Length: 259
Ligand SMILES: [Zn+2]
Image (tube, rainbow, N blue to C red; front, top):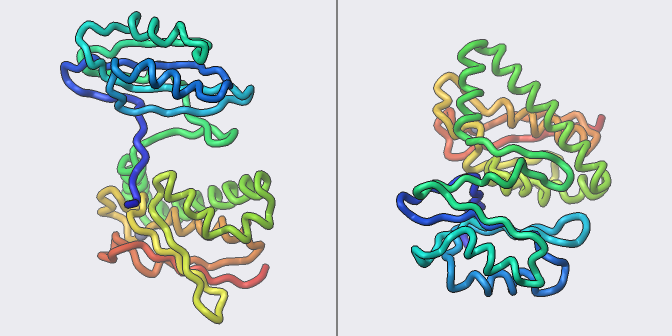
């Protein structure tokens, strides 16, 4: 299957449609989700759903849905699910003239870490602005901040997964960044050397205008900090190709000597 972007629904707009945010706290009995979806099958068209298990073994099903009948209401949907054994608690709220906002969730967790969603191009624009304000000092700042975050990230991963797993699965773990929207990356090792090449297609850092910038300094620093911490080496990372310099992708060359 083709690489695709995960869809999130902090909001959805479909002018004039009857939209509902359906939140169900489900029991831990097998088949709970199927039972709830079955009850909704003829009533709504699902725009986006997500489900996740909570620490006590019960689970949440949250959905953005469009009513199939104009007679449907938040109360009637709640009633359809509320009576099921699978549903411990149910909340349904209606959008406003085709605008539906997720008023239930108050943030995003990945493992135990809190995350935030922001527009890639918005962040890339922040980087543009830093370099516009501070020139080469801004480039150094982005590189240093990237490096600090790379170290921090690698330390957290090592704590969670163990240092050996992080070192052995570095390329596989690199795909986490792709899933998180930083850009799809592929690492290749140069045969006979310890040199690593990371090709990032669709890198977030140069997804904005990037008029003032010459390269992806933040990501260069991030890889340097990550490799330094994960491998206990003193790496040197160069960005040998960048979309900001007319390249097709961003390519980082990582060479390292043992610390
Ligand atoms: Zn780049």
